[in-house]
Structures are given as C-alpha cells and as structure tokens.
Amino acid sequence: MTYTLDEQIYKYISIPTSLAFASFFAFIAMFVWSYFSGSLNQDISTIISSKKAFVFVLFGVLTFIAAELMIGFSIRSKNATLASIIEISYPLFIALFSYLLFNEQRLNLTLIIGGVLIFTGVTIIYVFNR
Image (cartoon, rainbow, N blue to C red):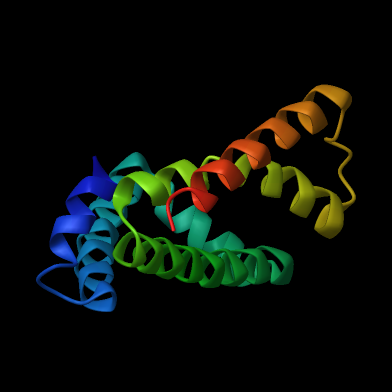
C-alpha cells in the first residue's frame, strides 16, 4: 500500500519532502516506542560506547536514506507496480552483501536457482514495460 500511496503523493510533493515527513513521524513514533519499551537508554549507551555499533548504525542510516530515495525515484520514473515487482530481487542482494561485507555463506543451490528465476522475471517485465 505504501508504494501505491507514494505514487499519488509524488504527484503533489517532491520525494525528499515526502520522505522528510514520513521520517519525522516515524522518528517520533519509534522514539516513543523505544522509550516506553525501556530499550532507548541502553541502545544509546551501546551506540556511544561501541565504535562498531556506531559505524553499523551510521551506515545503516545512510543506506536507508539512499534506498528510500532510489525507491521513490523508481516509483516516480515508472509506477508503483513496476517498482515493487523489480524490488522483489532484494533478497538476492542481501545474500550477496552478506557474503561480500561479512563473509557469511548464505548462497546455496536453491537460492541461486530462485535468483536466476527472479532476475529472468524482472528482466522480462522491464523489457516489455519500456
């Protein structure tokens, strides 16, 4: 539903402004939730005391921003349906980045076969929707 609503929102306001509003209200909601769940103080303490945790959180935020912008521009460029169908391939990139960044072996024959099928489907959809 988010992509469908975003497609309509982007007809009226820019992607960065829309993401700013969504992020602002998400910040408030998640801040309140983490405060009342009791995790906020411990998590902030961990981020401050652990350089590794700080770097992961920083890069997580940066990649989140980049991903949201790319999704927004893909929705505006084509449409919500096509953008979401192409995004189906993201689990493959999770496995790839897990391997490249952390040397985690998540690739197996089933994932490779599924990945080939997904990319074949995405390619067919992209080629015929130009």
